Length: 245
Image (cartoon, rainbow, N blue to C red):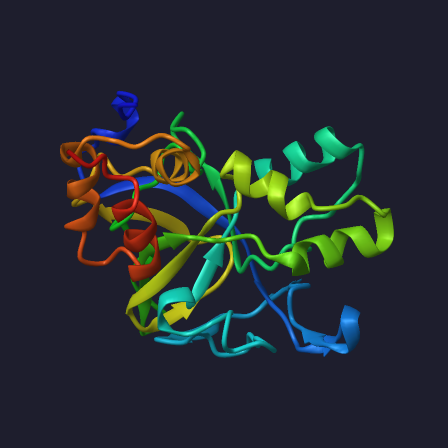
C-alpha cells in the first residue's frame, strides 16, 4: 500500500481552504444505558472562547474517553452524514454525532475530509484578531474512533445495529484537534491552513494502515511513528503493522 498522490495536498501556505459554517456545543444529558452524554451538539450563535480543553461551553460526560487536550475540538465532514443516511436509509441530522465544527470548501478546493487533511495540520479559524481577541489555531492529532455511543445515539431511534463499526471501516468519523492557540471562534469565519509538516499523513491513509490485516515494510510505517503530535495509541497500532524479518 502506498499513499495516493493528491495534488491538493501540495499547497502554498497559508491558504484559505474553507469557511466555518457552524459551531456546536453540548450539555451532558441523560442517555442510554443509564448514562449521561453530551454527544448531541447544538449550534452556538455567539462567539465562544476556546482553551486547551476545547470550547468553554462544551461538555463531555465521560472524561475518560472524551475531551481533554488531545480531543479538545472535534470536526466532522457533512459528507459523513450523507454516507450514513445513504447506506442505512436514515435521516440522521448534522450535529447528532458530537462534532463541534462544520466547514464548507471555498475557491474550488475539496472539502476538508479524511483524504484532504493530515496529521499535524494547523488550521486558523478567522483572521489574526476577532473583535480584539486572538483567533483560534488548532492542530490535528488523531482521527476520532467511533464508539458504542454512536450506535446508541442513532440506533435507539432506528434500530440499526453497529453503525460505529461501519463508520470506522469507512474511516469517515472526522478528527480531533489539539488547541495550539487559545482564542474565540464563531460561525462564518474563514478557515486557513497555515502549516502542513507531514503532507503524506492523510487521515485516509492512517485508517487504511490501521484497518489493514497486512503487515508493511518498516519504511512505510516508521515515518508515522516519527510524527511527534500523533496521539500515542495510534502509534502503537501502527508499530504492530511492521513486517518482521
